[in-house]
Length: 228
Length: 182
Image (cartoon, rainbow over all chains, first blue to last red; front, side, top):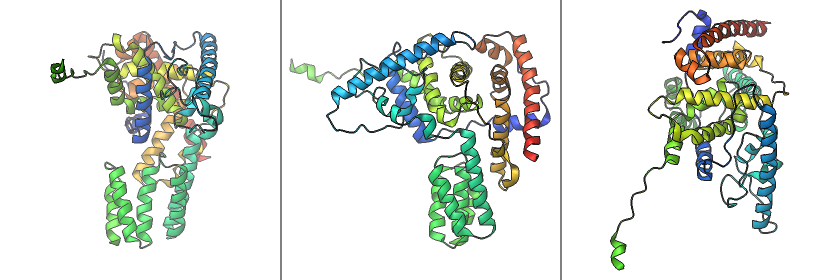
């Protein structure tokens, strides 16, 4: 049996074509995920593997088991860390710390050494709730879009200083946001427009390194070269 | 016993752990994209991807690695997202329709990102079982029989979900576009 090619609406078909692209995961995220994967593999197949049932089956059991495992894990990891940490030594939060909130998550290992990467995060997960730390994707995208729109408006009005300020704010709030590519391209153009040729050139090189296959690359390099 | 020092230690072969992590690494972009398409929020992606890895790792020894891994990963991701959605079912998720406002569209790339955002928002309005089939078929171009096998449904079921899912998706896109124009 091959694909069912019976007609989706033309507009849908166009959207499907655009959305087929698989975006690359940022290197930092990839490294973090793979570190966790290695740690998960080290714990062995019997430890902490999430039970993933079919939809509409066994939800309450899973929730109960997940909650119990979470409690036991948190308590065990807390005791382990308390016993091993010298008094007064702060526990550094790690990027993967907040993930323990998920019941699907492997329970932090009670019987593994406290130096194991999977066991360490338990303490700071209580301090920083995941949902509170990061906004939902759609909200952040809307905020990104609003900021970038303002920056483009400022750029269109030749108010390069304002554009750069807004772009810097975008960069601070969404360093790896969905519109990071557009932000960096616009930054090069704004720097170029404000006559800062050297800064524009180095920003363009950074852009080329970060987004080597960007469709904006040619225009961005041209904008940087124009001021040199 | 000094001669023993001359013996080289045996080369460490890549074990199943390494092979599994390498396979996961290879398809990590796909896993993230699939989770995103299935409605996972950006803040949840890493945790859900880790859940996908743990399931993959648990079943690695029984997997037929000569076959394409992506349909299998999609099936796992689908179940992980289903389980996750049940946990957060009390939350009301605002899909942020203003995010697809087309006023900015000066760059082609930005426009295409808005189109993708429109599609993702519309997909969220399609119930997950049908959304999964539409994504697998239309975006991942997975054949119907493989979808049926992966999701453990009949081929007729795949066609039915696909047909209804497309209609719902088209309606959702129109709905979002109309809401945007108002």
